[in-house]
Amino acid sequence: MTIWLTIAGMALLTVLIRASFLVFGHRLSFPVWLNRALHYVPAAVLTALVVPMALAPQGTLDVSPANPYLIGTLVAGLVALLTRHTLLAIVVSFAVYGALRWLG
Image 1 (spheres, rainbow, N blue to C red):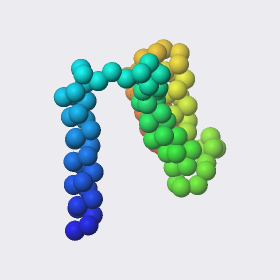
Image 2 (cartoon, rainbow, N blue to C red; image 1 turned 135 degrees about the vertical axis):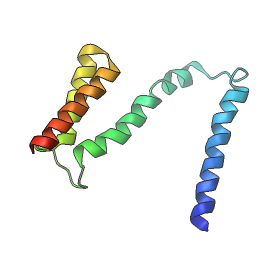
Image 3 (cartoon, rainbow, N blue to C red; image 1 turned 30 degrees about the vertical axis):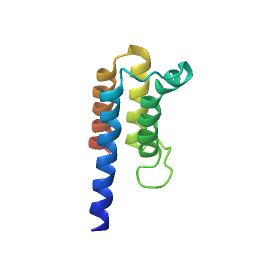
C-alpha cells in the first residue's frame, strides 16, 4: 500500500509541475542565467541515463572493446558530432550495437 501511495504521490507531483508550466508559463519570467542553465537540462539528463548503462552494463565497470553498449554509445556520439542528425545517430548506433551482439 505504501508503494502505491508513493507512486501516486510522485505521479501527482509530476502532473502538477508540468501543468504549472502550461498554465502559468506565459506569466513566468526566469532570469537569463536560469534560462541559459535550463537549456542544458536535457543533455544532462540524457548523459545521466546513458553513461552508467554504457560503462557498466553488468553493474561493474567495463571499458573493453567487448562491451557493445560502450561501442554503440561511442558510435552514436561520433555520428551525432559529425552529422548533427540525431535520428541517424540513433539508427547507426543501434545497428552497430545489434551487429556486435549478433557477432559476439
